[in-house]
Amino acid sequence: MSYRSHAEVKPANAPWIEEIPAHWDERPFYAVAKERRAKNTGMKEDNLLSLSYGNIVRKDINTPNGLLPESFETYQIVEPDDVVFRLTDLQNDKRSLRSAICPERGIITSAYLAVRSEGVLPGFMNYLMRAYDVQKVFYSMGGGMRQSLGFEDVRRMSVVAPNLDEQTAIARFLDRETGLIDGLIEKKTRFIALLKEKRAAVITHAVTKGIDPDAPMKDSGQDWLGRVPAHWDVVPATALFTVSGERAREGDQMLSATQKYGVIPLAEYEALEQRQVTMAVVNLDMRKHVELGDFVISMRSMDGGLERARAVGSVRSSYSVLKPGPDVEGRFYGALMKSSLYIQALRLTSNFIRDGQDLNFGHVRKVKLPKPDLREQAAIADYIEAETARIDGLISLTERSIDLLREKRAALITAAVTGKIDVRAAA
Image (cartoon, rainbow, N blue to C red; front, side, top):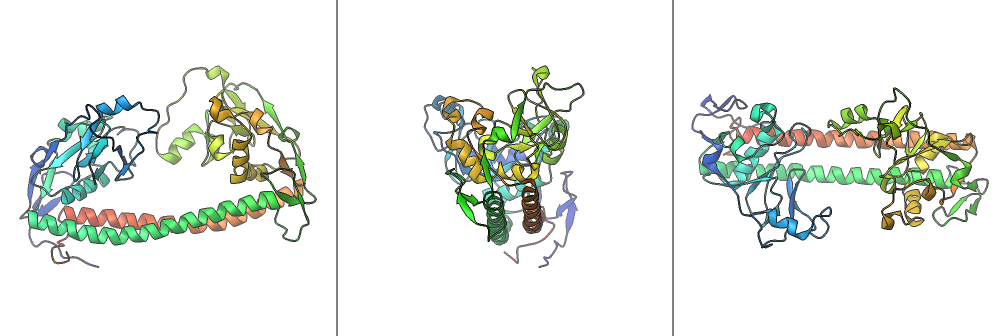
């Protein structure tokens, strides 16, 4: 759908907006927004809120990452229609959405900036700040070198402001149009979730039941494994892996054990995630050497299984490094040890959660593993790679369509709130 342009325009004062409609005003931020300063002294409120993915969401105040109740007295009280900003970690995180409108009364961390609109409708202000956010306006403030910003740093920021009737029309138009886009995104997101469930099921079935539907089956003797092909062995992990305690070698690159990518160079992980990771500076001589194809037990293995090394280097000393034996096809056991059934088995056979221990080989060795012959392991791994590649292709296509919808959403918001299009007739 095409939209009209405004007949007359004028240059904008804000450097991130080239021009605005001639009948619009520009005002400094402090003229249209007042900072909230209401502390939660005496725990007047216990509705804990947080900014997540561009929305204000509720959090459970009883399990907020170990914070004590008295900590929330330092939080600030926010009201419905306040606009909240997270203007912290600006140098390291350049992907997050940093603003959102508050839907209800509650408390948020004092690290956030909360403002009340004055002379500008909250709905319009919310969309305008989202446009500024998407255009990375906040990153250039403070000379572009600041890790965080406060109200004083943004108080002179130029805010474009049509009259209230036009603000209302713009907000109403964007509510409707973004609602339609969000509905499409939600449907596609659900489809991706179903594809990921299918992907996990394909892997789990292949590594625990094989890929021959006509193969005779037998009881494995393991609750987590159930029935397996009759010609498979079921063996202790010690029959397949040995623990390596080799210290890091000179010149070893730092590796990061990740659930998403496996064990990869730290620099590669930072590039993939577009963020910096704090590097260890103590006990570097205690780090452990890792070879390509080794398996690593990390602190996250309780949630995501064991990770397979994609590079040579070193990992932190608290991790366990497992060397695969001659009967191990790394791809097969890499898939098995990240399957949901295996992860559940790890959790059930150890008390490390209660005791606050790190997961280690002592826990892994308690879970017996299926052992097809090497040829069948390779065939199963080939099958998994082919099937997951097909599913991953569908996921990628769907994710790309979601990205395009989000780009369309962001472009529409920016065009409407900065006067690139005239939506009054369409509202």
